[in-house]
Image (spheres, one colour):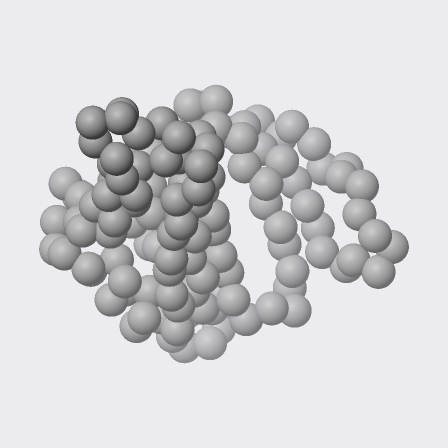
Length: 138
């Protein structure tokens, strides 16, 4: 796996006093910013991606294009060409996914088990299913 440069934008986000989670904003080498949330008490991991294109971006002669593209992204990729393999991987690891297209953006999201099948803590040699799910999600 190729290493991508990551910059920490901030570790100090304002949050309610009862919130025990840790938050961090990072910037990837491609300038994408991500909010990371760490909650050691949960058994699920998740990710969401919001793309700044919705149905207001549709050409007048092709209504529904943004929504059609939303569905196409679940049909397979060059790296993972098997149709619906993404959903099958998530289901096999107690997860699910969905997406929605709004007027100005399209949102894709999933959740998955935070721990490997053997219920041990994740490590380099025993990775969380999240790692492979993110690879498919990318």
